[in-house]
Image (cartoon, rainbow, N blue to C red; front, side, top):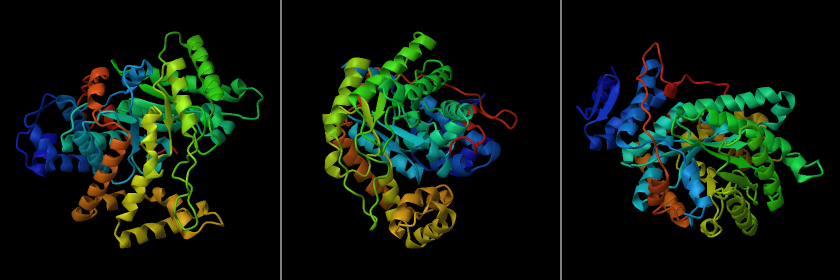
Length: 473
């Protein structure tokens, strides 16, 4: 059945062979043409067994040619040992028009010989962009295959976050919800997970250990769960967080309080278990930036000295890759070359690419989206918000409802946006010094082959699990 879908939709003859549930690629050049476009479209907008098989086919093609989900853990541990460094890995939140966006990222990676970059989606983004993990993995792998990229693909669960309000009402239920999402994501191929329990930090306590206690204790519980889900041959890269983004800047004593408590608790509960590979901190940014009344973004007072010191302590005292900077995409262009200089391990980039997407939309579609926002997100509007502030803060919520409309944009407009993305990703990769990091990835990272049974109507593949509207928020 699936061979017929591929051949009829893309007219590629015998480029891909499926025999006895095993995929073999006969013509790799065909993967960079219409066949992949047709296959990923079925993986996103298809239904039932056809969708499941399309996702499986993309996964298995990747396994055959060496485009496999992988963990960045061993590269980060090598950085902690001082065996590599001098770059900052961009973790890019791919929200809207995901196939086109990811294709641009992989084009950039090929051109600059980059390997140390991650494609990520947060717990909240999974919901409002309508991208369950199995779909997200299929789209990211398809984009890599379409552009001819070869090598490990680092797909990350960003801010798998415990909601403090929900935790205060039902602690066990909220932690279970994050575990459920982690299981779904790992089954789909997310081998990098940012466990965010920083929302549980309680500054009302006198000592730093008491302030961070719930953060590290719940963090250990989630870390142990993630480790229990690991596929054979994979050590998932797990990140912790000590300061909620957009709040007070983190300090070295806070980092030590969290890490000492985390490592002590993990050693007591699971002796010998691998811990964290990085630590997210707060150094002056906020997610999406601070929006002014005219829709522009306020200047950010980024504390680079603190970021550098936190990264140094994370490496030298705890063996991690360093600190992680969130909320960075709306920083001024001149800020990005500071991150590799300060040996920041990773930065997260999201909102500016969404802004670029909206800037390129036809006015008719943008007006339709904004009218939808007026009705469907009215409860999020503050009395003091201008239209510019309201739409800027809420328009991410329209990405899921308008996903099909974005995929169906005219080809010439998508090509124009693709060129703009190419310029932006090229600039960022160069400023973050990730050009040439494919060699370091090849040296330290192994992406083992993981073949899966072909799904049928009675037994869907775990990589194509049914959508779960309750996982995430």
